[in-house]
Amino acid sequence: MSANEAAKLNSAGGPIFRRPDLSHEEFTTAWHRHGQLVLPWCLNSGVWEYIQIHIPSQSGSIVESESVSAPVASDDTIESKARRILQQADGVAIMRRYNVPTEAGNLYFERVVLTDERGFLHDESGAGAIKGNPPIYDVPELHVDVWREMALSMGGVEHIQIREGKGVVEGVRWEEWEKIEREKVEGSKQ
Image 1 (cartoon, one colour):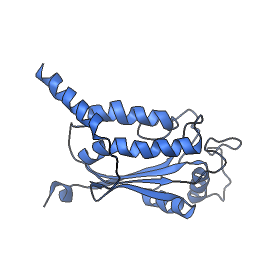
Image 2 (cartoon, rainbow, N blue to C red; image 1 turned 90 degrees about the horizontal axis):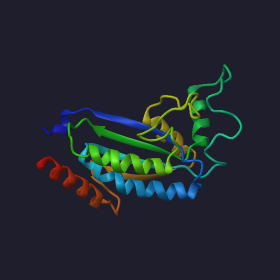
Image 3 (spheres, rainbow, N blue to C red; image 1 turned 90 degrees about the vertical axis):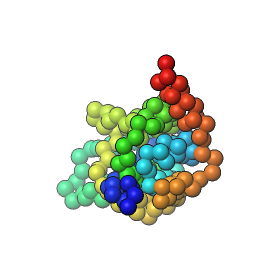
C-alpha cells in the first residue's frame, strides 16, 4: 500500500472572484497561467485533483447593488444563497489533496503562488484570502462537489489541471520551482 492509499484525501475549494480592476478576459488569462505556476507545488504536495471551473462573464463579480452577505428572506436556503454567490463569481477552484508531510515547496508557495494570486484574485479569494469586516463575499460552507455541480449547471467550463496525481496541462512552469529549490539547498549549505 502506498502512502497515498493510507492517507486521507481532503477536498477544498469554492467560488473565486477577480480583482475589481481586471476584466473577465484578463482574469481568465491570469487564472490559466496560474494553473501552470501552481502545478509544481501541487504535484510535490500530494494534490490528487485540481480543477478550475471558469464561469461565463455575468454583469461583473463585484457586488454593485445588493450585498450577498445581507440578511436573507426566511424562505431562503443555503443553496439559493450559494447560487447568488456563483452569479457574482468568476470561477470555482477545487483541490483534492492527500496530507503528505513535506517541507518542499513552502517557500515556492509563499513567493510564487500567493504572489501570483494577489495579481488577479479579489482579496477574499484564493489560498491567501482575507475576509473583510464585513465580508464582501459571505460564502456559505458547502462541499466542493456541490459548488462544482452548481457552477457546471450555470454554464461553467471545467479545466482539469491535475487528475489522479498527474498534471494534465501543457506549459507547466518548472523553472521557478527549480530555482527556489536550488536557492534553498544553497542557503542550507552556508
